[in-house]
Length: 378
Ligand code: NAP
Image (cartoon, rainbow, N blue to C red; front, side, top):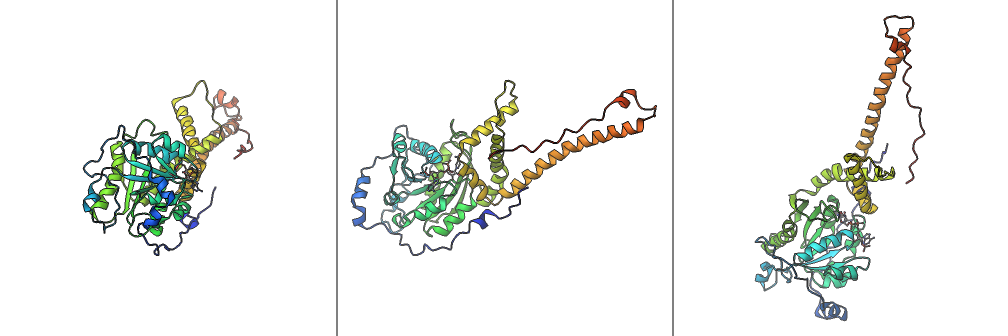
């Protein structure tokens, strides 16, 4: 029985806010016209082939910043195309990028590894330098990093190069952690939207129609343009047919520990058993094999993040332990009852003619001989 009791939050204390000193202004002209910046100013715009205007009245944020001192107020609400920067361009980041590009938005990406080729293939401009990315002044920064690396990546972003008001969004599979991280590390002027698309490259490969998309508007400025920008971002998922579920981060984590974490846990446990295809698979067994298959496609880091950064996961792990023991006890309890009954009958029947002949001759049912615990190599 596992007896860890430290919550993820305790394991991962967040430092006090110390980013107040940042000056969130646009970079000076000298910096803007640096050779590096010029190099990127020749960037491709988002592909428009097959793009749709999917904004249900909300409109999409245009290329201008959200600086409230901007003279061009009209542009603030004249949304046509959003410029969205994906930070963390791995498996899930690329998966999201394809749909966002398809909807006609401009997508930029930055990641630790070089994904310039993969990005180019789907119409995304890749940056290997976070300064360059931020100097492009995306309206939205979409964090698609692993749960474990998110804090490091966020701390490494040159926030002072972004517009004073930028919308930060995350898609982490845990929600309370990025919420508190954003609230602590991002300047007050930035808007915060915490989300969790409850699907991935496998479950969403045939489209996102009907798939749940959880979101929590953690902090959105009262300026109508900022409210509209958040809605415009959510429109990406609405337009793809997602089932939109507005829910607090805390509530999400409670539900996810009892569903998603258990699913991943069971998949990993079954994987250790080395289940094999048989010529007589039942439907139930097929779904177990599918579960193992789906789980194995996600990184271990993701699974570990679900455990470490959701304070409810440990309780679920202990409940699973308890449930396993209960079912085992239930089985052996029945077996003991049966054996005891037969033993008693056998004893009572010596010289007792009331007992049926068959029962008198019956051998006591033997408990299976104890086998050594199966060794599972991690
Ligand atoms: P992941 O293993 O959770 O994350 C991979 C991403 O994290 C890559 O972009 C990787 O960058 C980055 N990363 C990992 N370690 C890093 C480090 N030390 N420094 C900088 N970057 C680092 O796999 P994923 O499936 O792509 O998931 C990404 C996020 O989406 C996670 O937060 C996950 O919870 C969430 N999510 C995933 C799914 C899904 O079905 N996969 C569904 C919903 C939400 P490089 O590739 O450049 O190394």
